[in-house]
Length: 288
Image (tube, rainbow, N blue to C red; front, side, top):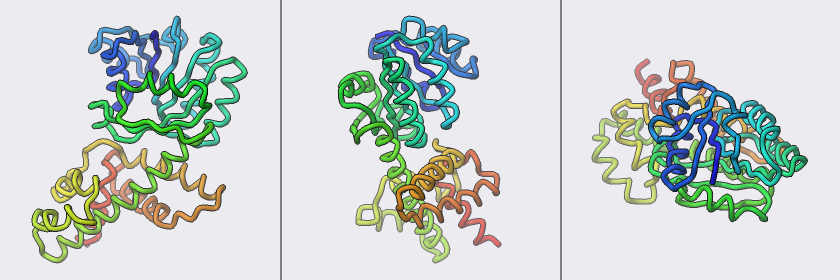
């Protein structure tokens, strides 16, 4: 297919690359044009300076940008350049409210919009092992599955517009608690004078084990926090989840507390540290 991929950052660039490797013709677009040029050079594709030119001849727009306002601006710009019957797949993490708004706006132009946030981080994007949570009409879901298979290990349709975003909120809520638990366990280990490697060997294969423990315990123990998803983005995602919880009556006491802890990490200068930097906050408090 002829595709346009908008948003060629640390997630979007490798995802778009997988589409090229799968045989699709992909025009790249990024607000910072140099990133698009770099991507195009790496994959032998074209990069356009405007979204409109990037969409010429495209049958679908796939996007992975930043925040709600970025998605809204991109979609409202795109639909004036897209033919009826086109498809938009949005991998950005946004509010469910925005997804419901955009599916209606796109329908007026006979364009089908799906919210399809992903989980798996930068590593999953690079290896093509992302989990995708989809919200939107069932009629064209098979097309979404086919288009995204180049970079997915699993894909699930949760329901109508916004359902994918709400599933991503649940994902981030679960991660927040898991990372804080691992951070506290490691912090306790150090305070108790135990060897972190030995404690990891003792507990990681049992009920305490998790992806976070297996992949971040050792790096946290070394105070290394440069492994992908940044604190600024996690706070954005948790903010979306907390807003949705206020609307649907869910009680997210742990997520709210961890969001507060991340604000303290930001105040330490850790805006771009990865989410395991909750441990840095604890160690800083121990040093006082």
